[in-house]
Length: 205
Image (cartoon, rainbow, N blue to C red; front, side):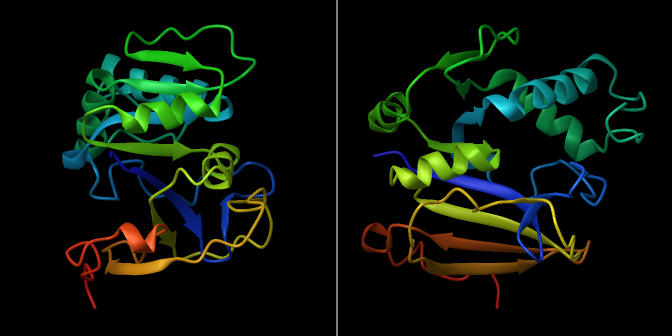
């Protein structure tokens, strides 16, 4: 069965946004999770979809232009991710979103459709976020692995990643990888009994 890997950027104190929705503390939106070779489908929630689509499509339209969202020019790694996103199927889990405009994207109305997606042949599935989506997937035992890029910042307040997770989820440590930015990529398995010995080898000590 395919796995769902939830991968997000988070502050040291567990927030994915500042109290005013600030994301200026994120250095880059490239694939910091080393995920692209193993996935063929992405999942988003309604709240993240609009900004996600706008950001990556703006890079595709003008790779050398200044991005309105960040005020920066896209890095080469971000350009590569934009191309990946453009060719990869995306699924938006939402009961209210009426339509999507990106050619590679469709809407599903029920979390059970995500469970069915896991049963189909293919590579792993990347759960991009946001927090409500990840909580929904975890509450239905659909997340197999967590990859958290922990940025070296304490936000003090904001949107907590796991605020809507309903119960305790024991995790299996898989690995930790320091990054040049000062962030650390932490990887945990959420289905300990299903993990192979290979999966349990640390990325870096």
